[in-house]
Length: 255
Image 1 (cartoon, helix red, strand yellow):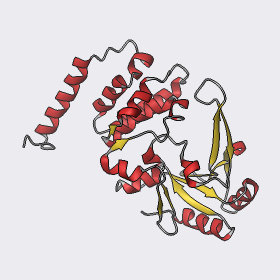
Image 2 (spheres, helix red, strand yellow; image 1 turned 180 degrees about the vertical axis):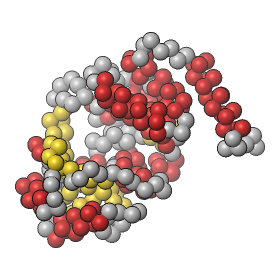
Image 3 (tube, helix red, strand yellow; image 1 turned 90 degrees about the vertical axis):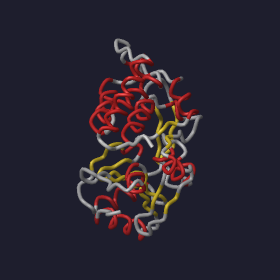
Image 4 (tube, one colour; image 1 turned 90 degrees about the horizontal axis):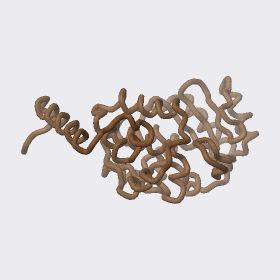
């Protein structure tokens, strides 16, 4: 993985200060899938918030996204945070109490993430992979699986993320995760967050039809777009048409 010099220098500075900086989320996932990451998320262990902020200031202007729960942006493509403890406080996509905790274990820190493939840590200095949730095995199986059935449903946006990830990566969704998604009320989602996930599905997936079928199967179409009637017959026709296109393009064979 071609890790930016800024990330490596930051990791070295944090190590010198007695902490540890680990890559987390999409950048690790993408690298393990053979793709060069565009955005970088660094989680910092063993350093208190005030000390981390002082250290970050030495790297240039810091955009504070959420100082109460210690998320900082260095430039456009690098987010730095402490591992976080979250507690649902009410109804709504943003109704959480969040607090940074630099002493959390890796298992605790990853336990509230959405899917196992997004819960893999990597040390940028040594390349060591830390995988408490079995995300690498799910990557090999091309499977989306919720990290925790107990906390997955607290964030309704995860239903749409499941559909757009399944479309973009051409992954299947674990049956238990499908059941979790179907039980989630999506009425609290603001329109801009809905569009954000739909945009990724439509613009970044090679086969957006797969994502639309998943939205139907996960119950999101009926909740968010009741005027769109994607019946089983229509969904099957979409996939049959896509299968035919891939056959004609030589992407599939009948053998």
